[in-house]
Amino acid sequence: MKFGGTSVADGARVRHVAELAKKHRDSGNEIVLVTSALSGVTDMLLKNAREASENGKTSSIKEFIADLTKQHHKAAHDAIDSNSNVEKVIRELDSRIEELEKALIGICYLGELTSRSIDYISSYGERLAAPILCGSLNSFGVKSHSFTGGEAGIITTDEYCNAKPLEKTYYLVKERIEPLLKEGIPVIAGFIGENEAGIITTLGRGGSDFSASIIGAAIKADEIWLWKEVNGILTTDPKIVPEARTIPVISYIEAMELSYFGAKVLHPRAIEPAIKHGIPVRVKNTFDPDFPGTIVVKDLKQSRDIVKAVTVIKNVALINISGAGMVGTIGVAARVFSTLANVGVNIIMISQGSSEANISLVVDATHLDAAVKAIKEEFRNGIIKEIAQDRNISVVAVVGAGMANTPGVAGRVFGAMGKAGVNVIMISQGSSQHNISFAVSIESAKKAVQVLHKEFGLEREK
Ligand code: ADP
Ligand code: ASP
Ligand code: MG
Image (cartoon, rainbow, N blue to C red; front, side):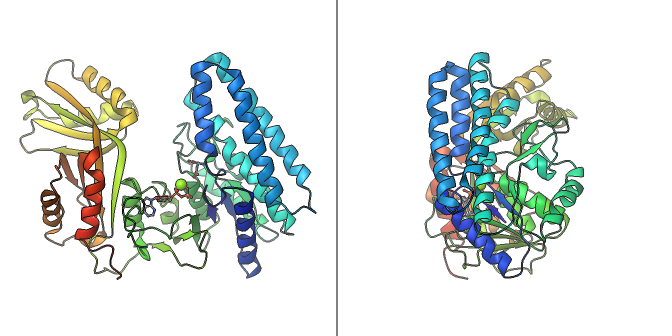
């Protein structure tokens, strides 16, 4: 079971999590808990690290450290029963916070923030939350130890800020964690791992979903449960369409497409480890634990609904590469893609017209400058005449396995956009036909999502 940031927002919520886990254990289940940072902590850590590297003010670090200490001390006192050993947990928190303070001061003096230091600093959110949850369980008489990701056996690549588990993770986690299940509930800090040199890495924002899935796959759990603040995976983001409904059952493929295309409810890689061992993933609401939520499963009987969900990705940018010299020249696309791969740019969408005179790509907005620079360098010789870029876009996607072989879905999608006066900038459909995605201006993304949600009747009870 993984509990996200809102689920462990403060001491009272952590106590609720410990009680919920104990209840499930008492009714005969073996459980591993994966925790996120207390709500908002990761953002604050990143903000302070950035500011330390930019303005070098140690005074603001002192202030931040004081606030962080207060927040975690309070959480520990609220989460842990008073007749239990709160002091031991407080000492553990203090010693971690002291290390964090030193690291932040170091960043102040150095005036630089590498991706390796970003991971180190942001790891503290989960590394402070785990001992509190563990202390809370202990105070309810449940045996528990807390682990960092690396201690639990999550050994990753060196890709800081976006690391992936190495294959040996699966047997290490099994070896270290499985034997503890008989006697209690181990607590593991989500989001973080370490590389082979023992340096802390993170699995990317929202990565505690991924941690839970890795651990679940390693111990061959019966189910992986991700506890959040929403009623499971919904037909779209409820912040955009309040009428969005819970999708009771969804396939692995659909859930992956949804998360790749911006549904913030799942980390984009969270389903991969579960697929490996065919483990069902449940997405549940901590504020309404009896609500069934969503179950993500391997095979799904063909369902009647063609479109399951609508998603939107913000913070993306469009690159348009054009030039008459590209027509009939073999290998241009290959060169573009390998150039971008070499500089670590992830391509979200691709389209090329049959005239071959241009290729359009959508990339993460943070990668735009690096991407454009790399393409310009690669094509110094002139095949490419122009590289245009546009940061003012969002990508909207409709997702559903039922779209495969159903004619007319694209017609309905773009017909609805036309009627709503939304200008479509670029279109792409993968040959799996599980998703149709297109780029629109940032300003019209919300309207596009609302119109599509209505067009496919997603707000109606099935
Ligand atoms: P946690 O970090 O607690 O695990 P998240 O905050 O990552 O949970 O995920 C829940 C958030 O995802 C919600 O606040 C919701 O607004 C957003 N969201 C976006 N798309 C969807 C969707 N299709 N279904 C459910 N929630 C979604
Ligand atoms: N705390 C991390 C984040 O905010 C990881 C997570 O919550 O899943 O991104
Ligand atoms: Mg999340």
